[in-house]
Each structure stands twice: as C-alpha cells, then as structure tokens.
Length: 374
Ligand code: ACO
Image (cartoon, rainbow, N blue to C red; front, side):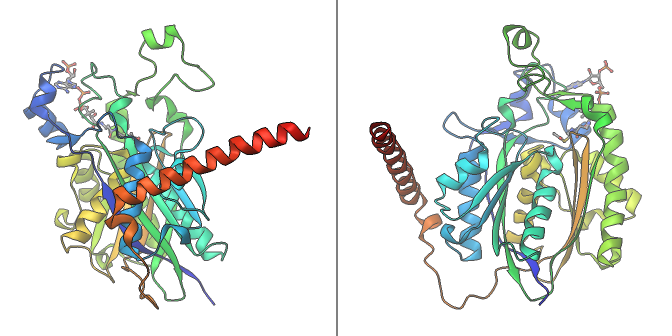
C-alpha cells in the first residue's frame, strides 16, 4: 500500500504586543514610509518576558492537534524548525514535547533558518511515507526580537515573533505532500549570520562588546539571492510533482519582503492575487512565516481542501527550498477523541507542568536510591 503524508491540522500563536513602524522610529533613525516602501512591513509582534520560542510553539502545536482531532499522546515525532532556539541544547522540540505532554514522541530541532519549516515538513513527510511513524507535528517558532540589535536599523525593522504548526498524518489516500526541493550554498554563510555564541566564537565580553551575538546581514546580497532562487525552486518542485504553475491555486512564500515576493511572482508570471502575503502585519518571522500565512489563508476560506499549493522559502545558510502540496484538511475520524488540551489549555498546561515536576522528583529520588546501592 502506498502511504501519503497529509497536512491534517494547523495552528498559530502570536504575542499580543505589537510594534508599529512609528514605534520603531522612536528607537532607531527610521520612518514608516521607508520601511513600508522597502519591505511592505507595517508592524510586527514582539514576545513578552514570559513568552519564548517553546511556549509559543507549544500553543501553536496544541491548536494544530485540536484541528486535526488527535490528542498529544498520539504524536510520534516533533520537529521544531527555529532560528531562535531556546538553547544550543536541549532542543526546543524536547521542551515542547514536555510542555504538550506528547509522551510517545521523539523530538529534535532543525536548523535551516527561514527555509527550516519546508525542510522540516519534508523530513516528517518522509518518515510517514516510509512507514516509520504515523503522526508528526512540525513547528516553526521564533523570538527573533531577542536576537536583533535594536540599534541596527538595517535589521531590527525586519523581524517579528510568532509560531505556527502543522500536524502531518499517514493515509492511503493520494494527496498531501507531493514533492520537495531542498538546497544549500554555504559559501554565502557570512551574508546572514549570528557570528558569536556558538563553538567557533563562544560568548565573551569581547563578542558582546562587538555585538557579535546579534543578527548581522548583508541585505542587498540576500535580496539578490532570494529573488533568484524563489522562482527557480518553485519551477523545480512543480516539475517534480508533475504539475504546472497554472494548476496551482496558491503560492505561499516565506514572508521576508514584499518586493522579493513581487519580483519572484513577476519572474514566474504568476498572479500576485494568488500569492498569500501577510508580512505587513507580522514582519519576517523566519520559520513561522509560512505556517502563519497558510493558517490565515485556511481560516479566511482562501485555501481549501483539494487546492494545489506551493510553499517556497529562503534563508541563512544560505538555504532555500520549495514544496508542492495538495491541501487536505482533517482526516475523517472513526470516533471523536477528547479535545480538551487546546480548549482548556491553561488547565492542560498546568497538568503537563505538574507531570514534568513529578518526573523531576522521581529522577531525584532515583538518584538517591541509585547512590545508596553503589
Ligand atoms: N530606515 C531608514 N533608512 C535606512 C534603514 C531604515 N530602517 N535601513 C537602511 N537605511 C538606509 C541605508 O543606510 C542606506 O542609506 P545610504 O544610501 O545613505 O547609505 C539606504 O537606506 C539604502 O540601504 P540599503 O541597505 O541599500 O537598502 P535596501 O533597499 O537594500 O533595503 C533591506 C534594505 C530592506 C534590508 C533589503 O535589502 C532586504 O529586504 N534584503 C533582504 C533581507 C531579507 O530578506 N532577510 C531575511 C532573510 S531570511 C532569514 O534567514 C532570517
């Protein structure tokens, strides 16, 4: 039996706090007119002190599971694509696994910057198609506001915080993820980078004084690269899927810059009305941008089951990729599962925190007993 990987659930979470271009002009020497005309961005959401990549990702994941109609305990794999992980390790995915009580799931992070969400959905789809698992969650979550230099007007105007998630499930019905293209060119690594804080340049007083722990970007070069690869990757992935551009209802690109998206659409001769764009309200949310745009298109009725859609993105690495998908919607269920985790999420998250605390106590007690036995 051929197995297919369908996207059967979706969810997002964005912080309440909004930072407008006018607000930004109080922080750095910029203005609304410059930002809107060069990027298309009007505002972005910014995480509050209590929010993080894992907390936002967990809420997006619970919402996606609610849409799919499956409980967290059924999830077998969690992949978090993020450019702003909580730590180098443990992975943000493991933290989210604990937050949502996905007791059966393996979890890991995937680092491919803004292309990461496409790469991660492809990895989850491959695991499902091979029969290794039946159910996965892929999350794109970012708190980039903590990694930008708020004195650098070339970068701080671009980025925003938020999270989006897809649930993928196995089915014998054709559809779901049809094809994917993943590419990388490390020779352009220095064009978009956070130089310090890793093993090459560990954080030190000197790196901090030089601001090397912030995002550094050569905007013009990234712009040129992006406009070139977006059209190329879209054509390539459609060819792999055996589809023509005219047969697709939607292209959902990484939301980095309105001008990049318009240039790519022009190169493809694709109508801009069929390109989903919401970067005006969220800015560039890196790995969260494609799910944030997709979920908006589903919720306002644009993206419907049976539609052929292309996701396409680019980012640091350099990386780029595209994916062709036949949009599905939730799979029919034999029986209605309990869906309280998202609806009563405060209560549910309290339960998972208590569960996590109990596991820590158990580990502590085990340590004492183990110590006595030696
Ligand atoms: N407000 C006002 N003026 C500004 C600002 C600002 N926020 N930023 C730069 N300027 C000035 C510059 O100082 C420069 O002035 P000068 O001519 O006197 O020297 C002028 O505006 C033009 O600067 P450029 O950098 O050439 O502006 P450009 O038109 O290239 O726009 C931008 C800059 C918006 C960053 C653009 O290059 C871009 O969008 N690049 C792609 C970036 C991107 O998509 N990055 C995300 C990748 S995804 C990931 O992996 C995270």
